[in-house]
Amino acid sequence: MTKYDIIIIGSGLGGLECGAILSKEGYNVCVLEKNSLFGGCFQSYRRKGHLFDTGIHYIGSLDEGQIMNQCFRYLGIMDKLKLRRLDESAFDQIYYKNGIYNFAMGDSLFTETLSEYFPHEKDNLQRYTEKLSEVGRLISVDHLKKGIIAVEGMKYFSTSATALISEITSNRDLQNILCGSSLLYGGIKDVSTFYQHAMINHSYIESAYRFVDGSMQVSLELINVIRSNGGTVLNNKEVTRIIVENEKVKGVEINNEEIIESNHVISNMHPKRTLELLDKNRSIKNAYISRINSLKNTYGVFTLHLVMKKESYPYINSNYYLNENDNVWYNKENSPKITNCMVSMQASSKSEQYAEVISILTPMYIDELSAWENTTYGHRGGEYAQFKENKAQEILEFTRKRGIDFGQHIETMYTTTPLSYRDYTASIDGSAYGIIKNYKYPQIGFVSTRTKLENLFLTGQNLNVHGALGVTLTAIITCSEFLGQEYLAKKIGNA
Ligand SMILES: Cc1cc2nc3c(=O)[nH]c(=O)nc-3n(C[C@H](O)[C@H](O)[C@H](O)COP(=O)(O)OP(=O)(O)OC[C@H]3O[C@@H](n4cnc5c(N)ncnc54)[C@H](O)[C@@H]3O)c2cc1C
Image 1 (cartoon, rainbow, N blue to C red):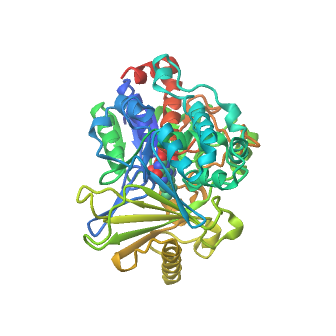
Image 2 (tube, protein in one colour; image 1 turned 90 degrees about the vertical axis):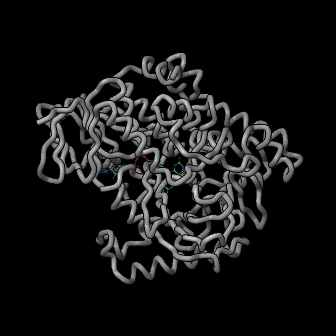
Image 3 (tube, rainbow, N blue to C red; image 1 turned 120 degrees about the horizontal axis):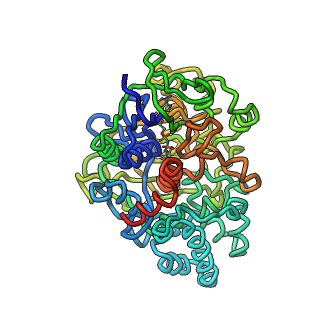
């Protein structure tokens, strides 16, 4: 039986990036994925010849010299990706109180564009982008070159996004518009941290791109890197137990039968799931387990994928964030009413002129689906199908009322709910972005890449910031437990 240096549980972006980095550095890695499709949220599935992205609509900081570009370059995948840069003058369009406000790329164009709507706010907008850059600069290619992965930014984790923005401008409409894409980070009013708001918005203001023909290309390219470095990546291998002997992880059990051994294990699963599968041991204390179990997770999303009739609806190279009046933060109390939607067109190599697939996302808590809580994919029954159909119609009505009418252009529709995410990626309660970071308790929401079992490590969106950028940085931090921060940072920075 092969004994690996490192078993990685889960082939989400975090797991695959760890696999690629560590295999490049000579470790014999084995990535185990429970599903037949790799990639977790970086997975695209096909129905009747159409491709649907599950958890990535756009990605930031991919211009030359920017952080994601550098990381993907180091990983050896940058030049292989098929990308489309979003509209520079309006990568996001925020629908707010019956008006549309554009977010443009680059600090000065961003400021100029919003100043056209708020001419007296130009200085404040400049201060806003400077503040975002201050947080964005905590990570940079220059830092990497000096051997630093990220400069400490705890003060922004303990600062409320809404509070800091209201210090920058007293104009309530502008405050709301600047938070108009809060759905992107599972934003909750007076809870979300300025760190998340700034890190994510700064990254897109730097540069924003869509993947052409699906985000899964990233997963497939990373798998190629791992395999070409001698690593193993296996699908349909659900880890059902993490085996501990003498206070060390010995390996994992897969599909309740086979056992694979390794010197180390990295889990890309939610930390709560990791603990559920872990053998009893003395090293991981009950206090840690109850802290992890008590952490709240962000809302999930209901996704409506529209397949458009051929050459019927124009492809729009920007995203819409549609908000009900001034309601830019989704509020559970309004559930099940739809108050916020994101509309994103998938980029396809078939046409730059017409949309083939359009995805519409709206926040949803799993409570709304309690009637089907104990069901599994494909066996949820007719009432569930009807629930989804009704929700889809409500969404279309919501967009129609805001001037976007897809009606006669739709060929077919597909939907996913938080139950789909719960059952596919094993996210807790179908949460879209994992553990909530609350500025009031910044330390509590942080989960370290290390555990008290010396050879068990964690990675993925739950640890720090979610999304392509957050998960990539966390993967680097996880891998630096093996390679050393300075060594790895310099390698990436100088790639
Ligand atoms: C609807 C939606 C839209 C989003 N849009 C964007 C966006 O536009 N831009 C952006 O940057 N981010 C976006 N995100 C966030 C981003 O997709 C995630 O933060 C990121 O992909 C998470 O990666 P991960 O590696 O942490 O975990 P995941 O992608 O959740 O991967 C975890 C993997 O572990 C596997 N697994 C779980 N349990 C087991 C087990 N027992 N055995 C084996 N394997 C197991 C799962 O099957 C999965 O493959 C979006 C997320 C959602 C849900």
